Length: 174
Length: 342
Image (tube, rainbow over the protein chains, first blue to last red):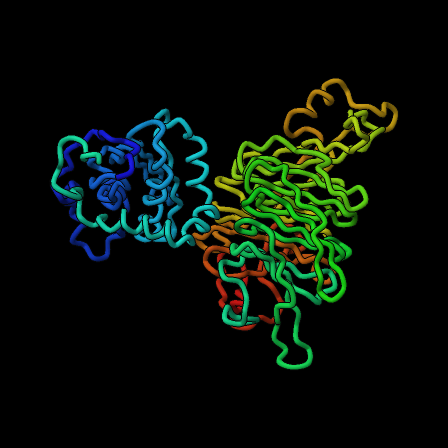
């Protein structure tokens, strides 16, 4: 088996399955405009699988609800994520998975910016620049192999926080 | 529809299209790394057919451009290079130079309106000026100043100035100074002209600016981007008149190394939500005086829109021309009508 970039990821508890948003009166009002907030964005991305481990981005603390900023009035969203280690070469791929997930799920009016949390990655500027260059992203997604990898990570995205039974300790290396 | 994929066209996204100056050929630059040259089949179907395919780039072709005379074609790519091709008889294209001085993807190439001089814009945050010495092409100058990817560039009507649009949300105006220029700007050692930033338009776009067009007819600059807005600017040379002094003041000399002093750029008009909530990826002014007040824009909503600048220069408004399949939306006196999808 090839060596994993991060052999010993720290694993966090995922919140039990469902959205932790509290019930609001407008939830039952069909005419109310559905305001999109950080919780909703978090719910969309929390269960994306990490490319290397059978765990979700939430379980690895790569994504956190508090690192998402939404402005529903000017239709902007900023998602910051934290790679598990500073030289993580999967950072761009993880960012791309987040972008594709939001591209597919959100109304097109939103302008989405994705960035690594400041100070969490040694090539933070380069990673951020790629993730926010829509031409680079579009060209990358025309690569069928890369698209397949992204789709695999996104396959678990609707499972609400838990990708697999939480496994303590590293995966066995062969 | 001019052609379809099954007729031997491109295998991936077509990113850039350009008419040859004589209007007889259409060049198409594609993510499949090739550039197609198409001609209309006058005899038979009237359809366009691919008469040449230019290969060589290692990955996506981003932009292509014909020189003023139509004798040269430039292409650029994510592979960081700019290629110069010479147009020969019988649809033969000979590659004159492969220029590999950018350190990242080259987003766009644009020719000087009169001379055989090329500018390129790059993900490496710079713009390069290219000239030739008897078909031997070289980088004459590198314009540094933008803080992020330069997405687009265009020359002024005279070709002595250049406007650039960047992901750093600014536009910059650059001016060419030749050796021995009246203001005493020091040029480069080899006798090459030097390009200096003479104005920076800051705070007028709230997100990445994808496209810029400098009208060769009315001299206005149009810019558009991810903030859903098209803006028009008028640029004035605010340099103190070269008369008595003939030189810049010490302050002006110093300022030439800093953004925005010698030229003023004033906003003339804007259209917000020109394509609704969609990014506006390209703007282009009508190339000649036939319709010098027309501006075309293309957006992520999949539509192409034609705008007309009103005489009082306060607005971009509804076009008077007959266009099929009109989708009229009047939204505070702005736009316009929608062209049927090409």
